[in-house]
Image (cartoon, rainbow, N blue to C red; front, side, top):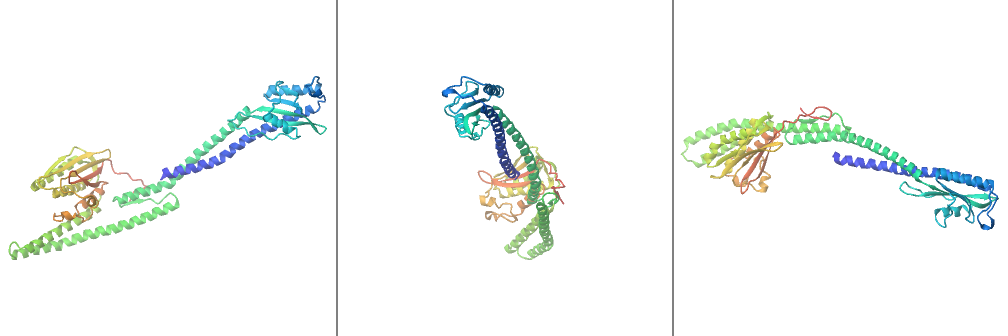
Length: 480
């Protein structure tokens, strides 16, 4: 969930920072240009004031041939201005002839931004603000101001400024803004990580505890301290629900165990009376034999129910166990039974360690091997194989019996379930359920699959690492 929530928060924060940063960057660029434009307006106004007092006009529309002291002062100012700042500046008459200019080779062009600014200033108003020059553009700033004498525009002062320095200052301002945005983004990401961790950590613990309860660890609980108030209430409600579910299941287990235990004595007495009754009847009576068989079957069912109740209620005594040696031991124990039925029981059981309750695992393997031998025809083979992966140790029991269909595989292991094709084979339908309950108590599992060309493969899996140490505290879940 954090991988989905965190990118969403980061995208939202990035959008907010961009929405603030982009207008700020535009504002910085405009402020820098406006400052340059204001400086140029001041400069052109000063040059216009000097040019206003130059009284000598250009004769006959030709270039001036004589000068006065004020004109020399104006020319000197323009020359110094060009040499110091690298800005072209000139005062031009209405007929485009220069009164003074720097450099002296710079004249009014026929078209372009400079000419547009000059023509606008001839109308007795300062030229409009130039277009915005961005740091990636190699533009220039042109500012023109009219020279007014006796209410008439007699000349125009024009400046043509490079923008390298202005663009450099704008870029530095943008870099500062970018650095601030990056710092703010890092802070926002850190805050988002803390926030998502604070919100989602109890959710993860709830998920882990739910998984534990679903896999049989019914005593797992969630500590209700810490986290948002809504999640604290959810943790308390979850614990109350888990307590209620555990109480209900405990009552069911107790009922099954008590019923199985209480029924065994009257059933044993009933079977004994049937045996005594059979002694008084003729030998080979089919009815009494059928009653005895059903009574024994009922006794097996009661025994299996009691075993199932005890298996679901028992706590696993986990320890490092040689799974290969234990499987080989059960293989040897069941070999006489398999030989009596005409079934070959073979195994490949190399030394493999895992965490398991040896007694529970032995009982689970007994149930699986018994089931395989029971359904394997005479002359076929039951194979027991032990192997391991990085995290689990496995015992696979394969047979060459009739096997199960896909629909039957989905139900195998359910309590009292038996395939309709196997009703003539003795059994209660609880063996694999007991196996599953015994393994679940120690974080193990049992799975079922097809064995080619025919038959069933049952795989018992136990973990190779030790039981998880469960934290207690702010968000940890605990076993009561």
